[in-house]
Image 1: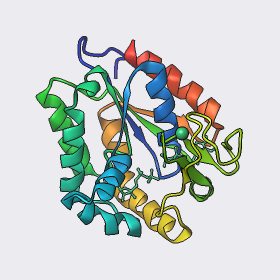
Image 2 (image 1 turned 30 degrees about the horizontal axis):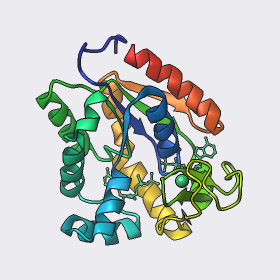
Image 3 (image 1 turned 60 degrees about the vertical axis):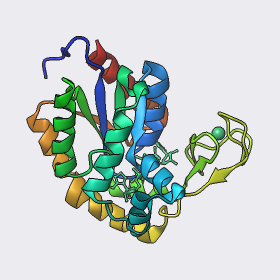
Image 4 (image 1 turned 135 degrees about the vertical axis):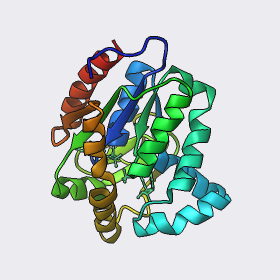
Length: 228
Ligand code: ADP
Ligand code: ADP
Ligand code: ZN
C-alpha cells in the first residue's frame, strides 16, 4: 500500500482478530472519532436471530455451537446493510470477513461501486488473553456499549456509563465450551485472511495485548494515516 487512497470513495477498514481481541470495543471508538459506521456481522446476526427471520433461524444453532454461519447468509445480510445510506461515509467492518470466500465476495461487492479496502487491521492477542476477555464480557442491552468484569467496569455497578440504562446482558455463546469452538473456527477459517490481505499489501498489525486506551491510540494513528 502506498498510503494514498482513491479520492472520492468512502474509506473501508477491516478489523481482523480472534473473538475477544477487542474488535467491537475499538470499532465503536473509531466510529465516534472518525465518523465511520461500524458494521458488525455478529450484531447483525444476533438481530436476525431475535427477529425470528428465516436467516436468523438458520444462524441460531450454529452461533450457539460456536461455528461460523454460512457464507450465503452472512453475505446477504452484509450486502443489505452496506447498501444503506449511512454507510456512504465509510465503514469499519468488525467480524467480517471471516472466510476466504467472504473476503473474495467483499472484493467483488466493493469493485461494483468503485471502492477498495484501505486497511485490514489485525488485532493481535494470544489465546489465553482472548479467553479471559470473553469470560468477563458483558454489554448494555439498551445501547450496545461493551464492558468487562475486570478491564472495563461501569462507574456505577450494573449501570451503563454511556446511556444510564440498567440492562446489562451476557451473550449466550460467551461460555467456556463454545469459546474453544470459536477459537478453532478462527484459526482454521479466519486466520488464512492474514496472508490474503498481506498479499494485497493492506495488512496492518496492532498489538492488542495492550490496554484499551493504548490499542485505541495505535488504531487512531493508523486510521488517520489511512484516511489522509
Ligand atoms: P471482539 O469484538 O473482538 O470479540 P470485544 O471488543 O467485545 O471483542 O472485547 C472483548 C472483551 O474484552 C470485552 O469485555 C471488552 O470490554 C474487553 N476488552 C476489549 N479490549 C480490551 C483490552 N485492550 N484490554 C482489556 N480488555 C479489553
Ligand atoms: P466474536 O468477535 O466474539 O467472535 P461476533 O459477535 O463477531 O463475536 O460473532 C458471534 C458469532 O456470530 C460467531 O461465533 C459466528 O457464529 C457468527 N458470525 C459473526 N460474523 C460472522 C461471519 N462473518 N461469518 C460467519 N459467522 C459469523
Ligand atoms: Zn447503554
